[in-house]
Length: 58
Image (cartoon, rainbow, N blue to C red; front, side):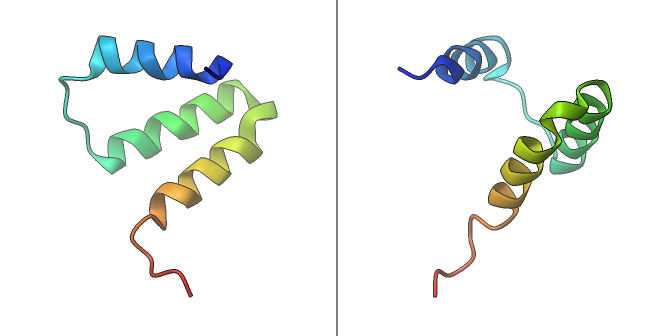
């Protein structure tokens, strides 16, 4: 288990039944980066990965 799995598991257990929009997620990712600028690159990579999940791989 990766260390990050703990946070993912907590997220799922605490909010797994909620429905959110990508606009809500984007707002909170921006807020997180504003509060934690050292995480700008990983959050950007996550957001880009999520945005491109359905793209065809060439």
